Image 1 (cartoon, rainbow, N blue to C red):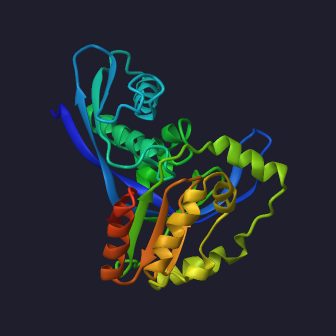
Image 2: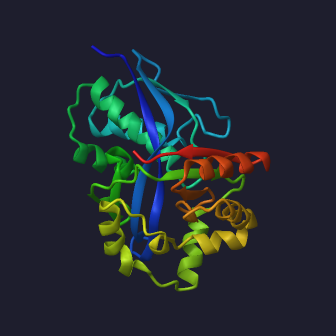
Length: 286
C-alpha cells in the first residue's frame, strides 16, 4: 500500500480570458482558453497515522495553515469521503510564481486531490474530483485535467480539445507586485466592460491546427493591471523587442509571457529580463 506520492503540479497560462458578467451568486462567468506549461511545483503527499493536515513549503510567503489551498483541498476531501482520521504531510517545492496568475495554488490543490484519491483508495473519477475541487477554487477543475481547454462558467465548465503548440516557446516574466483579483473584477463591473468573446471559436480552430493567431489572443484584465503596475508594460516591451509573436498577461496577473517561434530570440529575451532583475523562465506547452 502506497504511503507517499510525489506529483508535478503544472502551471497554466491564459491564451484568452474574458468576463461575460457578474452572476447572482457574486461570482463571474468567464470565457477562457487555458494551456498547461512545463513550469511546475513538486507536491509530495505522505500518509500519516496521526497529526491531521500539515503543510511544509520552501517559500515563506505561502501559508502553511488552513489558508493554504492544498490544505483546504485535503480537508474537504476527507470530509466529503467521510474519512475522520485522515492525516497527511503535504510538502510543496514551490517553483511557480506565487499569486502570479498561473494557478500555482490551484494546481497544488489539484495534485493533493489526485494523491489522496490514491493513498486512501477512494477510486473517484476525474469528474468527482473536479466537483470537490470546484468548491475550493474555480481553477482547480482545469488543473485536474490540464492540457488545452475551453473554460466557461466560473471556470468549472471544461471543454478539452487537442492542440499542437510544440513549435512555440513561452518566456514567462515574474513581476514582483501584488494583484487583487477581487479588485480587478470590481473594476470590470464598475466600468461595465463588455465581453470580447466573439472570436473564441476562431481561436480554438486555429489552435487545433497549431496556429496561435496572436492578434486574436486577449486578456480583459491586462489594461486594468497595466494602469496599476507599469512594469507589466515595460516587460511586454522587452519581450516585443526580441520579436515575440505576442506578449500578454496571464490570468489576473501580474505574470507576463511572450510567445516565440524562435528559440534563440526567446533565450535572448529571457537573459535580458534576468539582467534587468526579473525572474524569467523558458517554457513549453504540455
